Image (tube, rainbow, N blue to C red; front, side):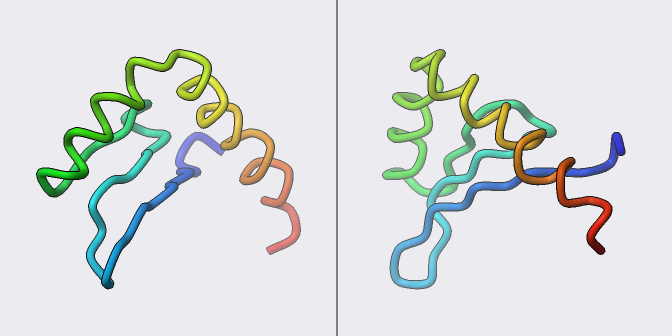
Length: 66
C-alpha cells in the first residue's frame, strides 16, 4: 500500500502546467504559470492537507476493487 500514488494534474490546451503528487506532498509547476500557481497553492496549508487526505479517501479505499 505504500507504493500507491495520488496525482491531481492541471492542464490547459493539452499541456500540464501543475500537479499535486502525494509522493512529493506539494504542488509542482511545469510552466511559468504553473510555478506561480504551485507557489500560491503550497502556501495554503488547508489545501495541502486536503490533497494529502485524498490519497487515503480515494486511492486506499478503492485498492481492493482492482
